[in-house]
Image 1: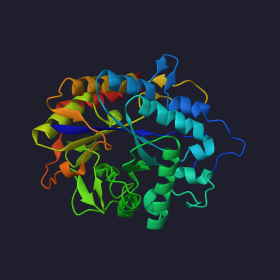
Image 2: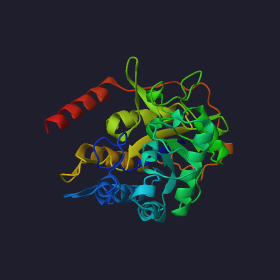
Image 3: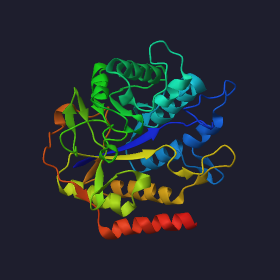
Image 4: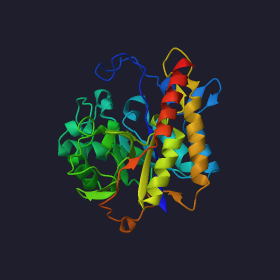
Amino acid sequence: MLNVFLTVDTEIWPYSDGWPVRALPANKTQFEAEIAACIYGKTAAGDFGLPYQIEQLNQHGLKATFFLEPLFADRAGNQHLADIVNLIQHNGQEVQLHLHTEWLSEIHDPTIPTHFKQYMHQFTLDEQTALIAKGMRSLQAAGAVDLRAFRAGSYGANRDTLRAAAKNGLSFDSSYNPCYLEKDCQIDLNQTLLQPSRIEGVWEFPVSFFQDYPGHKRHAQLAACSFNEMKTALLDAWQAGWFSFVIVLHGFELVKNRNPDTPCLPDKRNIDRFQRLCGFLAGHTDKFCTATFSTLDTSTIPEIKEAEMLRSRIRHTAWRYAEQALARIA
C-alpha cells in the first residue's frame, strides 16, 4: 500500500504593490478580498477554494494535510485564522504548520526576528526555532490540534530548519523539494532524497517528483502535472514498493486571475485534474491510502535507501504541453 500525502499549502497574499519588500500601507486593515480569493476561491461561477476541496476529499473518502500559514493573522486578525482552522478540522482534515517569512515585515513580536527575509534558511538556528514556536503558538491559539509537521514557505529550508522543527517537538518536515534544490531549498544532502529519511531529529518527507524529459525534474504539484503524468507516477511508485508519495497543491490552485480589480475565475483545467485525481485515488484503495502526519506512527516508516527516480511517459508530457498551449489560447 502506497501512502499518498495530499498536502495543501494554505496561505494568503496581500494585494499591495511591492509587497513584501515594501511593507503594507498603515491604513490597510481589510483583507477580506485576499481571503475570499486565496482561501475560499470565490468566483462568479461558485467557490473553488478550501470548502470545495474539502467537500471533494470527503465525498471520495480521502484525507489531506493543510499546511496552514499563520503569521498573516498578526496583521489580518486572529479570527480569520481561527475560522480557517475550524473549517479544516471540523470537516475531518488535518492542519499542520507552514511559514512564509515575508509576513515578518508586518509583525511586531519581540520573540521573533523583526526584519523580513525571503526564506527560512536565511535565519539562524535560534531564529528559526523561535519562528516555528511562534507559528505553533498561533495555530494552537486558533484551535489547531496534533501539530506534528512543518513545511517552509517556498520550500526555503536548510538543515537548521529541521533542527528547529525537532527543538519544537515536531516529528516531520516536508520542505525538501528536489526541483528547488540549490535555489529556494537549501537542505544539503549527499544524494537526492526520494523517500522519507530521518535527518536532524525529524523525518523528512520529500515532495515527490518525476523526470519528464532527460535531465529535468518535475514535482508532483497539481498545477504542474497532467493527470496522466500524476497517475503514472503514483502507479510506478506503488509498483516499486515506495512507502510514501507527497503531492502538493494550494488553497487557491483551482482559481485564476487573482487580483483586486476583477473577480477570480475558475481554473477549469486544475479543477478537472483535482476531480480526476480524487476519483482515481478513491477508485484504487487496494493500492493507495491517503495518509496524514498526525496519525502516522514513526515506527512504521522504513528507511528505503535505494529507490529509483520515477519517469514520465513521453505522450503524457506532450499532452501537458498541449493543455498549456490550449489554456493560453482560451
